Image (cartoon, rainbow, N blue to C red):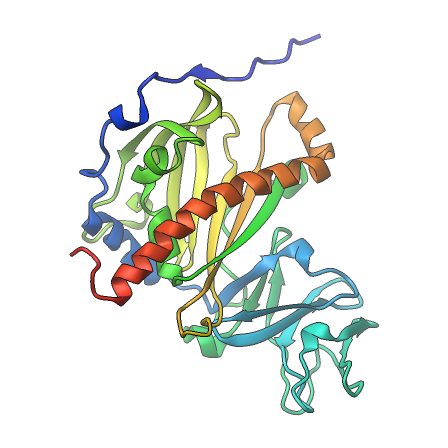
Length: 333
């Protein structure tokens, strides 16, 4: 029998946090801002991530306000993802509190049944389920030329992968979330419990950049325990204005992706913007033990979500601070 490969653990450098090589010179504001502006110029086709695909269950509506638009999503009789305005066209009842019967929304106020064919004053929205995330197309909110489907990043085959989706909400705009992810230099400083020995080995310039060169390439070790970590090489790209993808290109889990999607919500009671960060981890590995991890997905996914939630607790503080400085005219530069 073939022996199982040992985990690719490496002994991390013993450098203390304050003794790390400073990364602020590399993290040039004009480079980050240039990458952000190029991302914002790419088409989204007016598609927004609603949430995890498995959050929209059969027989139960799912509601979320996206870009100020109240949306309700549900499963049709055949299991397809459907979506439409979240207010009943009769007297405005919240359809997220309605019932799904025979693949149709039945308003709990007066029993009006709504389906994919629409009703006077109520037209469904285009919806898309990619197997990991649920999307909705809002043409009035997006204001772009619509696309028939969202720009879904290339992923490992879902039948061989393990995926988990985490959602967090912050007081900022989508661009602040995207800017955070287009700053890989902060990783080992801001998240020392998760990353170590981080080096940005490739970054685009601040001016015009060819599409294939508009990437950030990072060598980093994911900290496992104490001074042990798993070294990888990862590439960050921004395929649309509200998405950043990190893909492992070398090392353990090669081909795995982490997708960060920023969905604008409705402002809070003080008029401050709110954004949902919907992060999808799609992990793959050719290790024999990975199949066992996939079979134990109900136990593994909560751990994956916990890890992502801890990172985004910090990163939303970064994004919220960036919005606060921008909104008060105090942002550097």
